[in-house]
Image 1 (cartoon, each protein chain N blue to C red):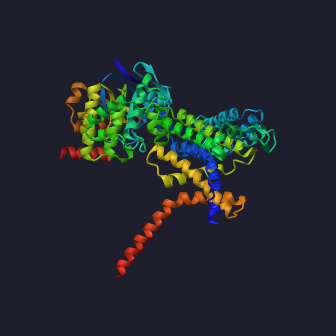
Image 2: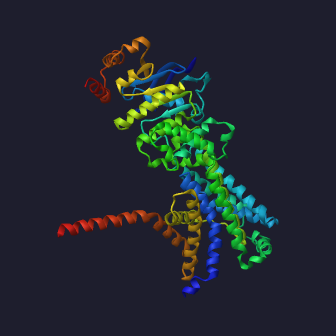
Image 3: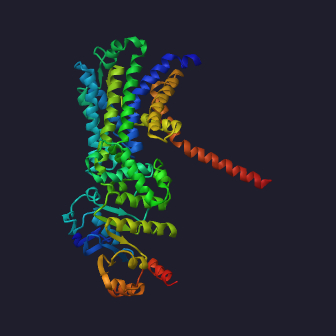
Amino acid sequence: MEMLELQNLHKTFNPGTVNEKVALNGVSLKMEAGDFATIVGSNGAGKSTLFNAITGGFIADEGSIELGGQDITFAPEFERSRVIGHLFQDPLKGTAPNMTIEENLALAYLRAGTAPHAIFSRISRKDKELFREKLALLDMGLEDRMKQPVGLLSGGQRQALTLLMATLVTPKLLLLDEHTAALDPATAEKVLELTKSIVAEKKITCLMVTHNMHQALELGNRTLMMDAGRIVFDVKGEERRKMTVDDLLEKFRENAGKALDNDRILLSKVEKNN
Amino acid sequence: MLASIFSLNVIQTALELGCIYALVALALFLSYSILNIADLSTDGCFTLGCAVACQVALTGHPFLALVAAMAAGVCSGFVTAFLQTRLGVESIMAGIIVNTGLYTINLAVMGFSSTLSLVKTDTVFSLAKTALAFTGGWYKLMLTAAVIALACVGMVGFLGTRLGLSIRATGDNAAMVRASSINPAFTITVGLCISGALTALSGGLLAQYQKSSDINVGTGMVTIALASLIIGETLVGKRTMVRRVLGVVFGSCLYRFIVAVALRFNVPAAAMKLVSALIVAIAISMPAIQNRLAFEKRKRAAQKKEAV
């Protein structure tokens, strides 16, 4: 079953001015339910713009978006976020710092949208038990700090909490925009492991931007490459399994028709070789 | 001299007014501290509450007058919210626009007269005098304290509901709110409507307390309410919601007390706006001044050490 279908998405920022920027130049993509695709591409290739088009941060100039069989092309952002989880590189973006862990989770749980979660209801004991149970899975000791404001947590803890909030009510689509890039290596590894296990357990359809070529091939079942607002390469199955980091870089040159301009991609290649 | 400053009468009046004005401070607590919006329509909204309450009280319905004032406040808050959430007006501009427009509306409500008198009419206070006769001279304080207590309990309770949490998150991290399937336009609208209702209720109570309404009664109200809010946050702290709300009431009463003392020292009534502006400026700049002093102290200590 198809979960996500993007058809010919176009977006130009500041059209008709000197700052005109074609951010999306005809992106079409079909994702099966349970697909986990990684996305690579140089800075400005349109990866984050694509995510924002899907979540409704702006409405695309052209094209359509279907999620779970429903056309959401013109749905407002807050409506889409009922079924789309979105994690950013900045771990501070996904949580409210002056509210407690419990209160943050309660907000995320609003997406469940059923009667007991009516707007005038308060956090029940049952909710608290559920939150405690889910927090324990993070293995960060957060289940004993539920009354503390989120602002006191470290970046890694906040990102893990954001991941938990985004998946507390299973979303139809999870968008991960380099969500471990700002964390220290050990924490990044931990958050990545959590991501893998949650996505696999709940069979969430997932798109993940990464600058780590190794991760791009290792994680998920499909790899996409973007350049100049288009998807220039799409690989899965046997062909993907056989692929090495060098092959992927070679593909990039072939498709984009230019050398890589991204230091981080080059660096991640060096790290791999070491 | 001191005895006359701290006379029971002065304290009692300060507490009565403190409780009435605490409603405006509570309104700003919601819009400014919680929603992080500088809502400058407060002055006009307060006068609107005064004017509406006066007109309705004149028809012989002092309690209905308070309800009507709150309804008018909700409308004012709704317009301010509509301007910023739907029409893309900056929040500060939205408040200024509404405030300006309200001046004419307030005049119209008052029948194009700049004052209204309730001297010959029943007010909630004249009714309370009979109903609460057993309290002696304390009936005004009983009534105003009951109103503010109700408002505080309501506020703390409301902020613990899912809608209340959503409103708090809107001021804390708007991006996160959109990602949690909450419509920030909705939470801002609800927040500003409640804030408007509280402001206008305060105006309505004050009109009946003073038995009059004046077109300029609300001038500077936003500064006074901010002063109360910040005094409360500085002195009572802002760790828990209950503390923060109690701090607002405490700050408002303390502010009224400072004003009463200033008046006792024969500071002319016309200078009171300057006094309140000074109090706000000092209260807000306190942390910066403390930091500066600590820095200078640290620097002097280091220089002293070097000299030795």
